Length: 463
Ligand code: ARG
Image (cartoon, rainbow, N blue to C red; front, side, top):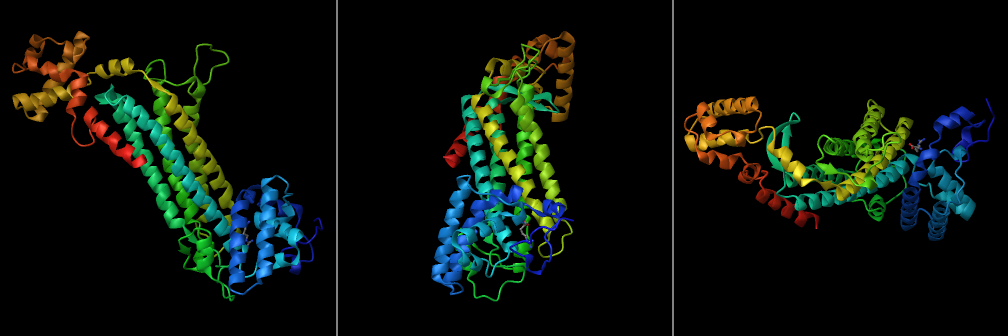
């Protein structure tokens, strides 16, 4: 056991300082220094309120608020010596404030605890990340809209089970992701609105006997209101769990799109060409152009979901109110947020730069009997067959085409009539992929008209 100096902030009842190992497991300054701006903003608001309520003098509050700005510029200028012995960002800032302004610094922590302090700082930080995610998603949606607009009527195969199902339009496929990413943005906005209540003034857990004004600090920090229950205020990490959950769902969407880009850019598909800027080469195979960004985005869900599971596990079963377990919230959220923002930016860049190969999309769309459903629908509409029977007749025609090694439009009328005598020349009009997509006019369907309507709606919303 090393006898180290007592902690200046709470060492009063201690005869000896912490063991080095204790310090190592206890300190969070290695990561929570990222909260410095939020911590200083929270302290400045708190000091102003303490003076307003006559709890500290105006001159002390002014010295504190000014001194905190000095500390802020030291940190931002890289001239701040972070100390592990001072555990965390809160005590590092306060200790430095004492060096800068002297005695008044000791009055800042009146009517406050690190428990409400960290809850406030972290909420402010996560709130900013919600805004950043919404911003990143907006940029990505705009890139997708540009792709959709360029190819609103380009035809490509639509898949189910990754088997050719029906022709769809490129614009329709891009707009599907716009919908998904818009829901993601909605989740971040909802989470932000719910988290926008201020824990400051809950103090350690029970509130305080000082006549504080929690509404004043809440307003100063841009919160809608103070949190209504002091126990809840210091115990709650729902806001972090919600952020992580929204991030995990968004990462799922990113990974699905990333997977499609990997498939589409392969030599077997060639649906898209990714730009050089967002691809890499192989050190041994000169012909290779690898979709590394897409692969990494596909993988990032692992980290984000890992962080989500980790924090759920930390919070599960914790009794009220604050427990040190909760210090484990930050690294998970920091890493998940950094990962998500990077993945969003990389996806946006890839989408903006990529070129869809119209001819390859159309060629693929016309293969694999993709208009079989159109044929069955024609049999229902024109010959009055029950759908089940039309399905059966079409199945026989597909089998015949397969035997002949051709596609449905290549069958002669004679061959068609060998399966069903009622089929007429008119059937060929529904077998082309362009007619197929154009016919799907139902709301939200794949026809270019519908897709253009979707694009117009989103362009108006995204501005
Ligand atoms: N570093 C701590 C955390 O991140 C701050 C709160 C410490 N509170 C306490 N009572 N020890 O959770």
